[in-house]
Length: 572
Image (tube, rainbow, N blue to C red):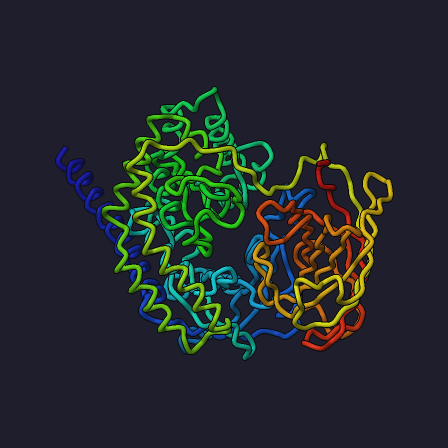
């Protein structure tokens, strides 16, 4: 009996030693990687790889399915590279492009560095991977550092973040945000165990149309999909969502915290504002889903560029889960209490202003973004910080508003689409243009066929070309832009057909480019492009663009022909 007791005691002691060792190892890994996320330093990352591999990496992109309904989960290949991080060189590192849609550019691609891709089990300061975001939608370069720091202070499981100066093959790419990758070390830090199920939302939601864009990442796919489907069904059941049932599968308190925080910092491209940029983790230990913030490069803006009508500032409910929850009085109360807590205890104008000034000082000598744009973006952040408390508090002091039916620019239902073909040509010269005299510039032609029937709505045409994109709807600031304008004789009907062209693929020789939102992104606007009432087709215009010999520089000529298919505007 004594021997059995002694054996039991020894077993317990051994178990405690093992647990303590694992805990210390986990802390050691966290401590080891923390120096790479210090916000008082600017990481210096130099990448060297074969020039051909670098070109192929730059032009790679996700494949979008019909009507943008599905995406390829693993579209990017890894290439071998040597990487120097703050003077420490690591050889045979895997490097690939990253990104879903808005941030996928070839000029300054977002990158993943994977240390164990070609060398098994290797880490760098405890990290398996580094994520480098290109800040293409953020001229201030400070959005992500400030956003993730705010999420962390709220108490939300969120990635660490700081800034890095990145170069590839000696080419300075400018300032990137270094974001903690949502992988095993992150999961273990926040959830103790990492054997759950991880998903990423790429403009995905819990309705039938968008559900396929909530993509499985890790864990048993069959079991993970079963759990995610259960969450979808719980969200959609009944005329009003059953809060008790929802709390049986989702940590609702944690979600409300994230929801309020996204709204407070103006993260319009997150789940609550745009059904986009989030991870979902199912923690098997707690048997609950958790949302994790991601893609916070578009913050400090309200309501964001895709909402063209008045909506409340203190709540956003573009995501179906938010919309369904906002219909429940109990949840409105819980949300507003949480928003008031964050406003009182976490929102700190002085702290955020100092963080912005600190970031600007660190990056000032390393910018590849025009200083005037950096200054303008920074001023917008200052104004947002200054005014946000009053904007939110004024609404919290009133009765909560219903969330309105909001028009969203999403691809139409394939079954209701009336096909439209656009064929034509343009020739013009890169350089400044008079927006009021586009029809007097360049040469162009456009034929329109709707449902197989030729149309002839236009008689006057013009074309202009600019070496930089100035279209706020499409985040490709380094891409050249060609705009064809077509008008009827009376001038009361005008279309703007805009081509945003990947400059990396233009080499001075004739080239055929896909109109696929990556090699070429085409947008059609019926009316004034800067009017909120204009009708737009920003997505789903597919086909080909053939360019003649083209050099992208002011004073140089550009000419092309195109053959495009899209959905026709609804009949007025």
